[in-house]
Each structure stands twice: as structure tokens, then as C-alpha cells.
Length: 482
Ligand code: SAM
Image 1 (tube, rainbow, N blue to C red):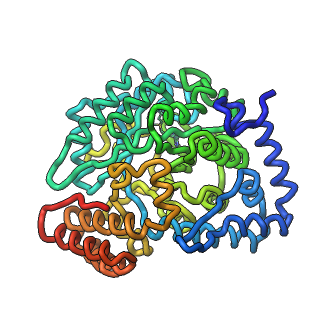
Image 2: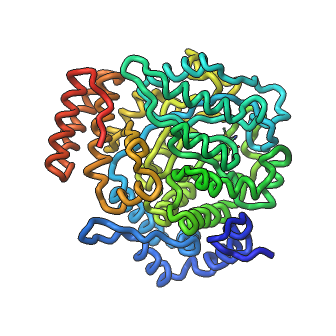
Image 3: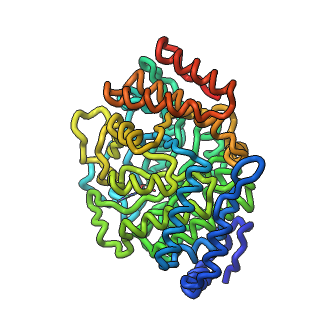
């Protein structure tokens, strides 16, 4: 039997079933241990130091105790600390992005995904480079600057060369004042060499959802195709990092397995990346299984209610305070509203999960990956965020300025975010307001920017940001960044 070792490169040792089961037992035994819970909460709280705020984070065992705890006032405290951490490290900025589906050809047999190979009635599509261009122009015309490209796994239809060609096409399109400045990539686990090629193509984050950390369930849920190989899939982030990609995005598809198991596995995966590569995941996504063509989510009997979903988000926030958290349009406006307060730092807006969906007038359903709950336009999402006190940010500066991996984390840890990310958010929001927003959104936005400029601590940075904002308003100059 494999033993737990966070530094190992073997899936079964760093995501160790025995350790997860022991963690769940420990959490169950201690879920009413008020003294221990108070100690864990004290450890999670941001501490003020001379250099700003610091957070220690939590181990998978500590975080699992909090997740299991059902003492109402302690749960309230978890939520309070999650909000505190969110504000301390991410402030009120919310980074905006959209997914772009390139191809739904797939050779895998994932039981929860409509792209599975034996689904014969879904329309199969793969964008040509001209179609990629049209989709990107439609996304630029909404105001998007950051994309996550998505594709099924098919070595013949979607080889790495196709993905690289699409990335080149996307970065090459400058329509009016538009530009896609960061392309994140969500494609199947691949080789070190292919990760190196993705890095050379200038990708932002490499995103790969584990789907489930429970090996037995994983094998059953992925009965056929290359994705069946649990170890190859679980060890993908190590290969990505070996290939030079130091921003990686983890995720679990909640609803497939028991959430407590997934939660412990997810935090262990983050601990493993930190232990081996010296830097944890750049982001964590928290998708829940949704209805889709040929997919009934009720078949999976581990669905989680909204209140538990919120608690999971808060506990992740406490465990890995410096990791960005992403929520997609799988979730409704109401669920997203609460999640934003508890730790989410990135949201998608106006997403279409079908191949070629952005160029269609009406939302097409024939090649969709899942039903979208939040169907509002980007303008509506931006306006809603601002009305709720958030700053929608279209910033893509970090990786373009070489602030990836531990360099981004150190920006977070030294409290320099207010002198860097904050002005970048305000400048890119100004671009959005000037070039794409409705009159009402523009009015709300300009008032917010005025107010938020005063929060930039460094006088010189504040003056430069104000000058750049005026420039964006009165000229076609764009893409200022710190
Ligand atoms: N083919 C790549 C892979 O194997 O990882 C890319 C994945 S797919 C385009 C993006 C993600 O959508 C999957 O990793 C999965 O978690 C999620 N997904 C699939 N079916 C879903 C469903 N019915 N509801 C919600 N999310 C789903």
C-alpha cells in the first residue's frame, strides 16, 4: 500500500487514499472540538505585520476539520475570516474572463460530459482558423481581454499543433481597440514537451480539473480513452511545471464524489505543488456537475446544496489564501453573489459553452458542454459587480510582466497589490467603459473609479494611473500597466 508523501511525484503517494480517509476520520472526531477549532481559526486569520498582511494557510487536516464543523458560531467565523482574507489579498477586484470552445471532438468516455465519444447525437464541431477569428472578434466586441480555451481530447482532430495554431490566431487579432491579452488553456493532460510548447506560445494558466481525486470513482467515471489513466492525469501539473508553466489551475467537478474526500484531495494537491515546486496553484476552480445533452446530473448522487458549496469556498479560502478562485456561469447570479464575498477572485461573463457559440445571435444548444445558469450579458455582469461593490478587472499584466508563479505570490504576500493590481484594474475597467459599456454602466463605472483611485497608497503610482485613465478616455491609447 502506498504511503503519504507530499513530495513524491507519484499520484498515489501525494494524493494518498489512506491519508484522505484518516483525515476524514480526524475531521469527524474533531468537528465539535471547540478548542481545536479556535486554534485552527486563529491560524487562518490574516496577521498584520510591518510589511502588511500575512496568512499562514491551513493543512488539509485542519481545513477538513473546519469543513466538518457544524457549530453555527464557528461556521459564521469561518465565513468572516474568508471575507477578511479575500479583502486583504485580493481587495474588491474581480478578474473577468470567458471560455472559448475550440472543438468538441473527444475520444474519452467521461460519464458526466456530453462530449463523451459514444454520444452520437451531439453536433461535433471544430473551429477553423477563420471561425476562431470570428469568435474572438465577437468576444473582443463584448470587451473581453482574457480567454480560457477549451477542447475535447482527440489526438487526430485536436492535436497540440491545432491548439498552438489557435493560440497564435487569437493573440494576432486586434479588432478596433480590442485584444486578447491572456489565453489560459484547458486541455487534456499531455506530455512535458507539449507543455513546453504551450509555454512558448505564451499561455497564461494551464487549467486541468482533476474531476475527482477518488481513484476508484475516477476509473469508473472515465471508463474509456486516455483520460482513464488516473496517474497520468493526476501527475499532469508536475509535468506542466517541468515544461516551464508555473501558473497552473486546479479544480474538482463537485457532485461526482463525496465532497469531503474531494476537498481533502484538492488541498493535498496544492500542498504537493508547494512542496515540490515551491509554488502552489495559481487558481482553483469549483465547478458543479450540470445538466447537458445526454447528461442527467441527478445520476451522480453526491450533489451539494448551495450552503455547503459556500462553505467549501470559504474553507478553500482559509486553506490557500494566496490562490485565486474561479467561479463560472454554471452557477446562478445568486450563488455567485455569495461566493464572491467568500473568496472568489475571477468570474466568467456572457459565456457560451458551445463551439462557435459567440457568433450566433441566439444562444445555441446543439454543441454545448453544459447548461449555463447565469445568462446575462457582459455589460450586465460588469454593472452588477460594481453595484455590489466590486471592481471588474480586465487586467492581464502579471504574466506579461513576468510575474508568474512565486513572483506573483510574492506580490500578493508583500501587500503590493494595491500599488499594482488595483491601478491596473482601474485602467482596464476604464478601457472597458470607454470602448464597450452601456451608458448606465459607464456612469456607474466612472464614479467608482474616481472613488477607488484614492485607495492607491503610492502617490506617484496614483498620479500615473489618473493620467493614464484620462488618456484612455480622451485618446485611443490603450494597454497601460504597472
Ligand atoms: N478535455 C479536457 C480535459 O479532459 O480536461 C478539457 C475539459 S472540458 C472542455 C472542461 C471541464 O468541463 C471538464 O474538465 C469538466 O470538469 C467540465 N464538465 C464536463 N462536463 C460537465 C458537466 N456536465 N457539467 C459541468 N461541468 C462539466
